[in-house]
Image (tube, rainbow, N blue to C red; front, side):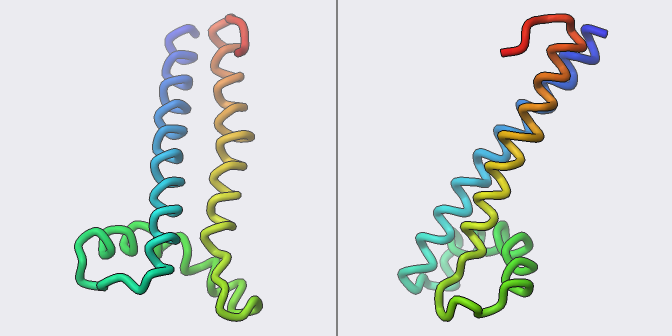
Length: 104
């Protein structure tokens, strides 16, 4: 059971690290969108490629209810925080209980 607990703990920490990276990618993409960037810039293209699949469905649901303000990045950031604080933390606690150790 210790092996499964360690596997679960490692997977949760990797997902948490990836969510941290994606959190900052969304923030950078939102900040860059304020300055009318060159759409052919490789950095801008990468940011749009990575963030649009997540932001587009939220924009479709919300629409333009707040006028020109796009709050979809804020919603994504809140979702990431919720996943980190609730789901990932719960998985880490389960992993420690499986290992029979103390929960941090």
